[in-house]
Structure formats: C-alpha cells, structure tokens
Length: 213
Image (cartoon, rainbow, N blue to C red; front, side, top):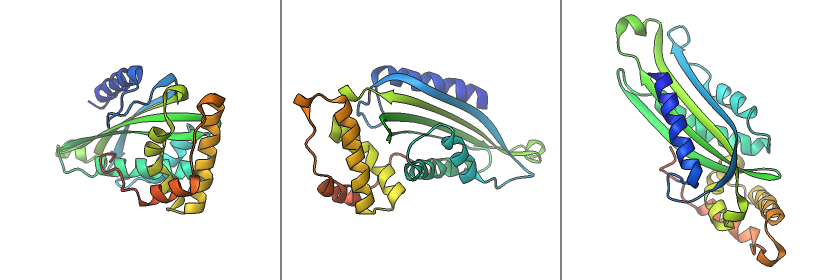
C-alpha cells in the first residue's frame, strides 16, 4: 500500500509541475526537475518514537544546498506535517501535501512534498510495525522569468518566519538576497521595485498559511 501511494504521488506531482499548478491556485512554473526522492518507511515496535526531526534534517541536507537557517525553516515545516501523518489513530490513514519555494543561491527552487501514513491496527502486525509512512519529494528549478516577485514573496514568507523567528533584520537580509537573485534573471527594463524594510515588517505580521499543514 505504501509503495502504491508513492507511485500515485509521483504521478500527481509531475502532472502539477507540467503547468506550474500549486495547491493554493498560484502558478509557480519550473524549467526542470532537479531531484526527486521517494521513500517507504516503517516505524517499528522496537523504535516507536524515532527521531523524525533528525531524519528529516539529514535527508533535506542532502537535497538543499542553501543557507542553513532556511534549511532549518524548511525542515521544521516538514516535521510538523510528518508528525500529523504518524499521529493518527489505529487503523486510520492520513495524507499531507504541500509545496515550498526558497532561495538556493543563485537559484530559486520549488519543493513539492507528499506524505502518507497509516497506523497499523492488526495485532499480529502491530507487534512488529506501528506505522507505514510514504514520502515523495520533488526539487525543481523555478522559471523565474514567469514568476513575479510578489507571488514569490507570498510563498517564501512562511519559511522566513520559521527560519529567523520573525527577526526583522535577518528577514530583511534574506529579502535583499532574493531581490538580487531576481535581478539576475530579470532585464534592466523590468527591474523589481521593492523596499526590504517595509516588506520584512509585512511578512512578520502575515498570518501563517493554515492550509500548508
């Protein structure tokens, strides 16, 4: 069942990436898929409380080559999703899917995540395995020329808040880097006009996206 979920998730993500479709009806087009990772794991009776946070950070460190603080922000969001998936009652299953967009200098990267988990109910199986978990992750290069800066900021904001604990000065620095990256891809006739200080304050006050997790 976990493997069949993995196959299905792979198809769904690739279909969305063809058009740049996202869960919140924004369009984040890509140029190509850079990396994908599909895993089926079991949480065993011998280790019913695995170090999910450590596993996620280790896996993401192998995929994300950007700023460590941004990596931690991404990992925190993922851990919350997985904890929900593995925290279901016996005999039930749950799916969580979301996407994130982040700076991985000098590129802008889109990550698509789909997680599925089922808590085992049968006693003879539960003696060995508590949960079956599937994770599918795609890393893609964003087509920056087709993405406007404000759309990017709206999906980058949740990561910045988690990464820098709403520290305005650090968020401002991250936004300046984002502006620099955008200017690499945008022509001089289509410059991005942006005040980092004001936008940093707006991001801090921005409500968290409840539909992500």
